[in-house]
Length: 423
Image (cartoon, rainbow, N blue to C red; front, side):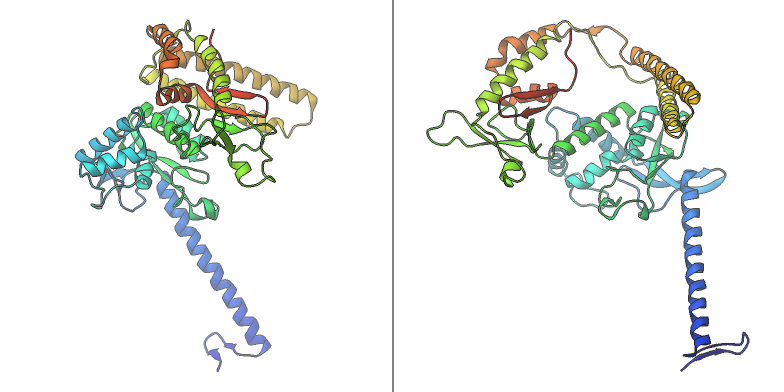
C-alpha cells in the first residue's frame, strides 16, 4: 500500500524517493505544530502581562466579574463580601500567638465554614490561599518580596501603589519536574511572572507580608519545636552534621536527659556523634546564661513601634528597589571588565549607589518607626527576675523570639541570635 498525490505529483511508498519525501513532510508538519503552539503560548502570556484574565476558577474570597483593560473586555476578580471578610480575618488570626495552619483549619471546620466548592478545609489549600498575592494591596515592599522569591515582575515598582492585587502565573516548562508550580504553588516563584491585576486587593501589604514571613519560617522549621522536655526544642542543631537534636527519655540511673541528633540516627557515616556524653541540662544551662545576657543588653535600647505604611514610605520602598537593581546591574557589568581605569570608575559608582541606598533606608525607617518609643524596660526586668519561675512553654516562646538556632558541639554550644546585641 502506498500514497500518491496526483495534483502534486508525490508518491509515498517504500522506494528511497518516497521515504525521503515522507520524512520531509513529517519534519514540516512537526515544525508547523510547534510554531502554532508557540504563537498560542506567546499570545497567552502577552495577554497576561497586560492584566487580562487567564481563565480558571477565582480563589476563595473572589467571584468572577468583568472589566476593561486597554479598551478590551476581560474577566476579573470581584471580592465576595462574605468570603473576603473571612479571608481578612484569617490573615489576622494567623498572626496570633500560637496560631498555625492546623489551628485555623480546625476553627474553620468547627464553625462550619466551607470552601468555595462546599467542602471541608485542610492545611494545604489554606496555605496556598494565604500565600496568594491576589489578596494583597501590593506596594513596593510586596514587589521586593515577590522578586526575592524568584518571580519576574512585569510592571515597574512605581506601579505598586498599595491598591491592586497581583496575578501570579508560570509556563509549565519553566520549572524543574520536582518544582512544578502545581506542587509548590506560591512557595518557589522561580520561572514565574507577576502582573498587577485590575482588581483591588483586600489585605493590607504589611499584614500580608507578616503572614508570608511566618509561613516561610514555619516551612523552614517544619514540625520541629513541639517537644515538651526542653525550652530549646526545635532550636538545637548538631554542629557536625547540621541535623536537628532531639531529647531522648532519660535512661535509668542517668542524671539528666540524653540527646541525639538526626545524623547519628542515620549512621556513623553521616555523624559520628559526640566524643563525650552531653546532657540536655548542660546545654540549657549554657544557653540560659547567654540568653539572659542578650536580653539584658536590650533593657535600655529604644524600641520604636512600627507604623502603617503611607504613600511616602511606599515611594521610598520603590526607590530602594530601583537602587538595589542598579547596584546589581553595576556589579554584573564589573565582572566582564578588564580595564583598570574602568574598574575604578564602576567601583566608585557602586560605592555611591550603596551610600544612596543606605540614605533611602534610613529615611524609610524614620517614617516607619516615627513616634514615641515603647517603654519595654519593665518587661525585660520581669523576664530577667522571673525566668526561673517560667514554665517550659513560656521559656520556649521567649527563646524562639530571640534565638535562631543553637549549635551543639562536643565541648561548647554556639548561639545564633536573631539580632545583634543591644547597648
